[in-house]
Every structure is written in structure tokens, then in C-alpha cells.
Amino acid sequence: MSNTLLEVKRLKKHFAINNGLFKDKSYVKAVDNVSFSVMKGETFGIVGESGCGKSTTGRTILRLNELTSGEVLFDGQDISTLSYEDMRKARRKLQMVFQDPYASLNPKKTIRQILTEPLRVHGLFTKKEREEKAAEIIEIVGLHVSHLDRYPHEFSGGQRQRIGIARAVILQPDLIIADEPVSALDVSIQSQVINLLLRLQMDFNLTYIFISHDLGVVKHITDRVAVMYLGRIVELAKTEDLYDQPMHPYTQALLSAEPIRHPDQKRDRIILKGDVPSPVSPPSGCTFHTRCVSCMEICKTEIPLLEIMEDGRSVACHLYNKM
Image (cartoon, rainbow, N blue to C red; front, side, top):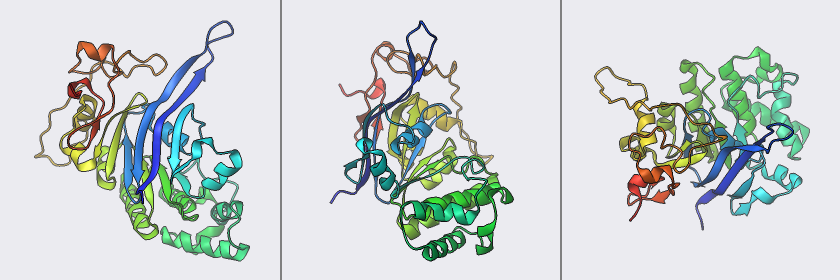
């Protein structure tokens, strides 16, 4: 029996831009031909600079953004072609924790209403049982039953994110996409939320897609990591392999920028030249070639394929093309 829970194939999400009445539309290629798989029980990380398409990838998998093309196979079923009603039912097993704990909770509803609503929408349990589930999950995430009748504005950012996590977990999904779940929180609170996610994963047998720009957090929580640049995956590897020996020049530059955590540590900083190109008109060939210190002539004209190396990782770079 396959251990693959999610398989994303050639996923594309392009946003149209209206250039005026007499001009042709142009497109932002936010996600451009992305493929990867996620195993049951693992934490799969997606990292990259702001604007690389990592959050759009997560939202498109759940069809919060409708995909332009490609396939999303969840537990063997192609959810990219489901009707609105069927997709709504499928979301019981596919949940999301959003980046902003202030914007992701309805300010007009109590925490009790926020937590019981997913159960009510999916027709699960009686009203009394839903209330009991809400009381149970609020304590599991580290809050108190007395908090259920309060409103979101009465909580701190860390507490709100715990409520957002409780809302995602209460349906007992198979997969949770966590989109920058700790980036809006104080550093002192981030570790608490990360530890909560790890504990919930063990207790509820969860699978995560963890999206973040914080390389330290990603290293701590993930099993495998995909590195994105301008809508494409440029490297995909086991976390320890990626951090110990990054192969793609962009991955090397990203990791060189990670803060040094001990004064005795030494690291050569790789400074990328130029700015990130516009996703509306990305460079030809390898989109990273305009900033790459190892750029060759072939990089300017041919898009490198994401190829599997001998150690099992995948890299999209002409430096490693198989001859």
C-alpha cells in the first residue's frame, strides 16, 4: 500500500493582470510547474524568499486559489477536478493554519462558535457533542474551557494562533498546511507553538506541509524541504542533507544568510547580486541566472529540469545536469 498522502503534479497558478483596454493581458506566474509528493506522517517544508510562490502553492493545493493547470492527488484522488460540494467534503481531511492569527478568526464569533462551526458544517455529532469536542480541543492546545465564550480580540497573538490550530485539528484531518504559522509571533512564543504542532502531530497522526522563510524553524521541524524561487522548485532534499550540503546556488545563498547562533561559528556569506526579477516577466532560461555567481551560457536560454541526484535529492541546475 502506498505511503504517499499527497502528490502534486505540474501545478501552475497564473494570475492575470489587466494592462488596459487596448493591451493584451499579462500574467504573474506565481506557481509554475511545481511537482512534489508528501508522505504520510512527515513534515514537508517549503522555503524561499517573499514572493517565491510558497504560500500560493499551499493555497492552490487546497483550492483556495483555483489552479491554472496540473493535478493534486490526495490519498489517490484527484481533488483538482472535484465539484464545489465534493471539494467542501474533502476539506474535512485537508485543513490550513494561516499566517495571521489576527485576520484568520472571525471577530464577531466566540471561540466556541469558531471551533464548533467546522463540525456543524460537515454534519458531525450532535450539538452537545460538538460543545464537548470544543472543550476538549481548547485544553489540548493549552487554553482553558472558560476561554470558549470570549472573542478573538481578548487574546494575544500566540493564543489566537493556538485557537487557529485547534480549529484545524478539531476535524481530525490527515493533512494540515501551515502557512508561516509562527512568523507573526514573538520569538519567545514561536517555540511554544512549534512544540505544540509537534505534539499534535504525534497525538493525532498528522501530516504537515510547513511553509516558512525562517530557515532555523524549518530545520527543526521538517523531514524534507523544497526550496522555491520565482514559482519553481530549485532543490528538494532531506532536511539534514539540504542543510549540511546545499547544491543549488540559490539554496547555498539562502543558508549563508541564516543567523549564526554561536559567536565561535564561522560562515562565508554569499551576497546575491541584483534584485529578484519580476514574476510578470521572468528571465529566460533559468530564472536565477541573473543573480547566480555560477551562471553559464546555457543557463540564459534553457530551463533546467528538476532532476534526481545519486543521493536521492532533486536539483534544477545546469551545474548538475546528467550528460
